[in-house]
Image (cartoon, rainbow, N blue to C red):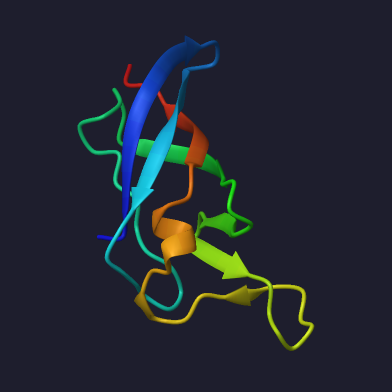
Length: 109
């Protein structure tokens, strides 16, 4: 798996939600169309509502909620707004990036 999250803080919110913050380590290979991020066993929920991800190295991280995948985009040499990373080994800019996230989960009742 290319993306491994770590939970730094977890807070119960009103409305039956949990807010979690932390970091994501990137390693290995990236698949076209994105890779999963598993929070299993890290928070008191299995239902991820939304995930907001950012980094410091200039890459753009986007959560695809419909397919439960994290996508990585970079500036394209062709002047396109953003190009998705191609399948293969993650570049050093991603594996060395300080990737942070904020996630919302449905709380177990």
